[in-house]
Length: 234
Image (cartoon, rainbow, N blue to C red; front, side):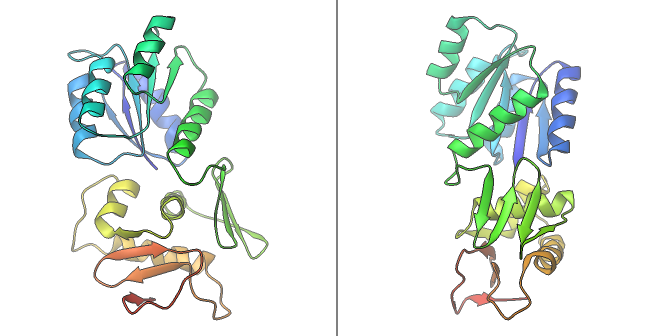
């Protein structure tokens, strides 16, 4: 999952970024409101952690601009100003949650998981696709009755595919969410990681694969894969 952290206090931003990366999120940061707004407008994020007191443009203005632009990305407001009026203003402007400083990382991570569940068709902390289960708290996958060991990137890729199961995802979209950089049409990094992931999660008994390649487009993860003329398994 790709997260944007808009926070001007360097130590706080680093604390959040390091913690989220240990939780296997892809994290980008901005240190002022204008930069954060531009990044959120021009890139796809799964959630935004937005400080209220920012230089240039405060968090309320950033939130208001994003919602007026039709961007529905889940947003959690972070602030040392914990008055009821501030919380009401943020929520009325379209924030999904409000976390006053100081806070523990454990609470931030739990609240982040909560707003991500609210915006997803998957409401449980355990994501499922067929008989494959991915625990988003322990970051462990299970299939065939056993634990599947995943690298950080393999986990991020699998989580994104499961959260978007039954949708066709382009290589460009996958790259932005899992590798946080623009898609290079000459690169085969997506195909390499899909191959590694398949080797770990797919059955070897002839069962149709959970991860399907869509010729000329990208990939799709399906609960019950069916024959499709546009699908080529590699």
